Image (cartoon, rainbow, N blue to C red):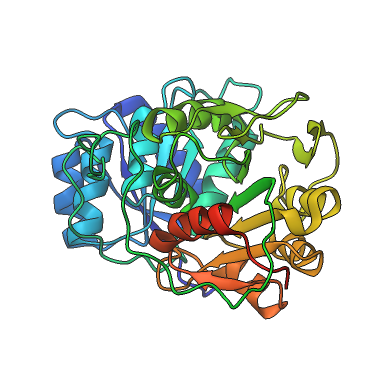
Length: 368
């Protein structure tokens, strides 16, 4: 790293003890340098304006305005990559809302140096700060103050009627109908917000089981699934070795691959694929093998290439495959790789995906 410009990190944290700890963690990493420390949300907003850091490490429980409000205002006025640092993996409402508002990742707070896993957690934090500092975030406008997007019939709450969105382009020409039996979705950076937008567009009587791989730290997966179920119409649960049901969303648990077949789901211990476990490639490949042309695959925003080859396998098996368009993807690497591999039936912006899914399950299309 000699001669290379270090990544400047603004730490937003109200505890003086944790401030010192995070300053030490950042100072020990040769890729990073501490740009400043803010003890409140209001101070953070002023410092981002003056310091222009490359990335923000954001605590979620702050005096005055909370981490969600900080994220919302930064993404509106001074877009900057934000990594939420959460001390308690059991309560994810605020960090998940921050991800929905535009934060890029949520990681575990290192805590005391006496912790057995301190070095592992500290390294992961620094790696996420480094990676996310490279993301080109965009200004976000018009978000409701409580973080919930308004939808007809549900007063802006997550549960209830599906969100009405403009229709997608006409379906590719088709001459035969097909009964779809399963939907798989994979996402990484920017995925929580994209998943909320997609799932809010599906009704409670959606006729397919939905299998989800979201790259997120293993300690946060259970809370993420619970949060997702609280802000979207469909029931959401962690996947397990069990039968699946139509209209239910099954989220792959941390550090296990998820596979699906007509009779049920199976969790698999195995090596990471594309550096990920759970892996979108593993899920999509299982759908290609078990369901063939009766499956739908959706690859959303994310860094790297996970899911691209699995989605291509689905496409070759006759499945209908959708990649999130670059116009809405926070990071287009995962869906873009699938497009380059020839594994995508069509690209759609995220606000058009749910409408396309409803059209597919109500009409069917000819296998490509």
